[in-house]
Image 1 (tube, rainbow, N blue to C red):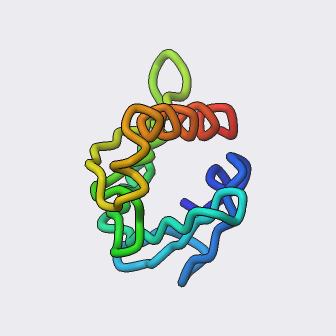
Image 2 (cartoon, rainbow, N blue to C red):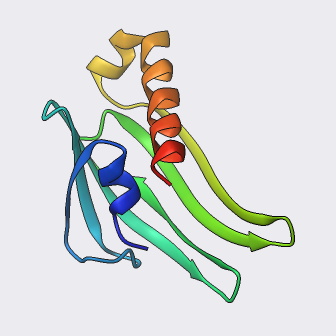
Image 3 (cartoon, one colour):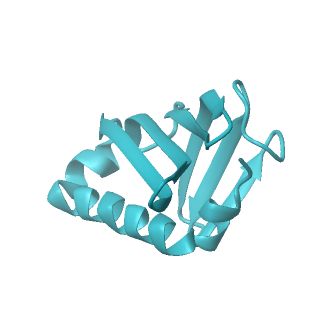
Length: 114
């Protein structure tokens, strides 16, 4: 529920709270170039499931949400990332298919980080 997965994926994280909870603002930077401001929209904290989702804020190159959920199952532990977005900036639109490759690369980094 903290920001370690994001940090271990190579993002510099600045958040208004050390743990994700609804209303917490978080800004992440990759390679100190792109600023990606987001706000946590909800959290899930149950016996075998925990996680959160954030939505993008103005200034983010994309418009959408991303959810990170860790679940304990009979088979072990499952880490799930679900995202939906569309381009919100000229840079993202100009990047075309490359923008999608960057998103896929970040998802891979999150999975390796966990």
